[in-house]
Amino acid sequence: MHVLLPGLLATLVWVPFVVALRHGRRLTAAGVVAAWSVALAAALPALERWSPGVCARSFVGAGEYAAQMAAWARTGVGCESDPTCFVPQHLLHAVAFAVGSVATAGLAGLAFAAVLFGWMGAYAAALAAASGSPVAAAALAWHPWAVVRVVAYLSLGVACAEPLARRGLPALSGRGRWIAFGVAGLVADIALKALFAPFWQRAVLSPLLGLD
Image: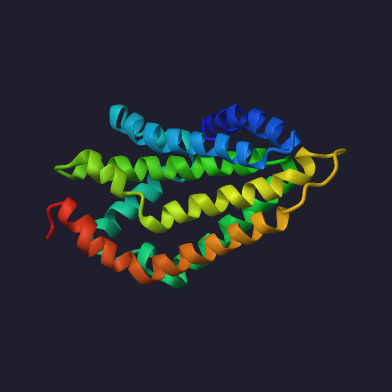
């Protein structure tokens, strides 16, 4: 399941994504993946609540991530508020996503993104289970910097997938702007997280968990 479900989820969106790129429609390609992302962000926490442990069984690392993040939400201690911990992880993830997207016209990048959505699904469900306001908790598990990161990956993924996806076709202009926007988003993600993660834990998550 650790390989099959992310691969299946990626393949479902990859086909229309590549078709859009081959027709020169970057915004359409981005919109297809954006809709897929919203669907996963909503469906995976709900699935985890309905069948606890399904994300851990389906996405490698999801169980460990949810446990670490739930502990941080309760205590404020953890990788989420420690730049020396999360910056190397973010850089590694970004490089893996970009390289995978370049090498497979986006398919491996989408599979990697599906795994990360599985992590978030497990965390959002854990937060919801511990809160008296489960819907609000599941939504607020998507910290603002995480939303910025998704948008950054979306822009970067389109630009990285395009050369192979459009192999044999003329290059489109403006690809560099998509790369620049994606890189800027990744930098903003790190900056926002470094500046505001402790505040978010104290002001938003602690009250949701009844700890204030």
